[in-house]
Image (cartoon, rainbow, N blue to C red; front, side, top):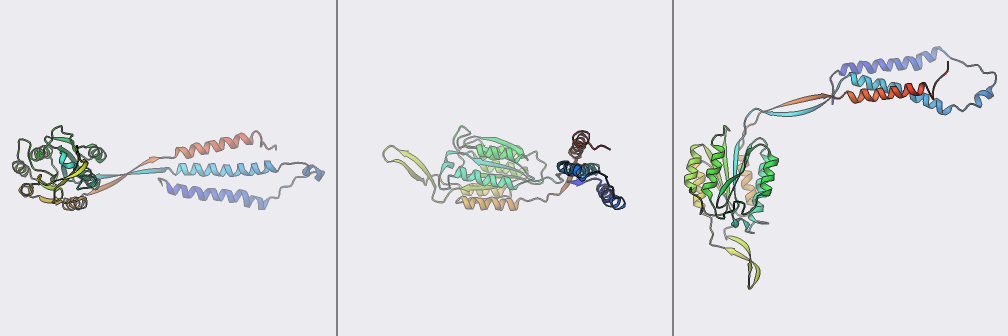
Length: 332
């Protein structure tokens, strides 16, 4: 809170203090009022102690109301600050694999949930960037377009599930093209696709290398992240003979050479996340690489808040006037 007329408040307090001193000290030192009674018994028989204290309270209330009026005249204001962004940030599309292989529990609690947690933390750190989300398995579609509304984006990420596309498989090329379509008309200084997958391209009409060449034409960089341990995924299966058990899939190997070439075609980088911790470190590295200088100007708007002080002062004065003319009326 600030006072628009702070000098007025200081002068008012000084004047009020001077008036208080004049009434309560200077005048009392010059005059010694006396009241003559024929008998002291009349005074002793009068129980006016409560009213005397109430009269003193009324005097304090008058000063309090004057102080409140002075505060109101000083124009108290409450400010709210805003940051105005002068430079654009980075536009980022996150392409997240939601195929059934992402249910592997070699990451805790599984690859899908680990990926969602890491991506959410990444989004929270990118304050000034526009970020969107592509969900892909056998098909690819835009879960959330580029936005600065991080809260809405986080809700989309939290609600994403394996099998959302309705068709299983891994259409990496389609995911890249879908992301490119969201970025190609962007005017941002830097355009980035973060591709998170744990499989080989086995679906879609466009292969990943061709899709990466299209991304390169629009000056879009691709950071490709392969998630999964070197030994293969671990899946929980219901065996009719042995019951529920864990099975390791050593056949579904990630084609790292393709993902590495996809990144190189766009001047991006390829990473391999072997566990949740390494995945988190990779996203931190990307966060550090893709930085832009953001110039911000801070503005503060102020709202007048004098009304409560005026209302309170008026209520106090009204109460004082009411008591002085009724219960605490003083006869001349």
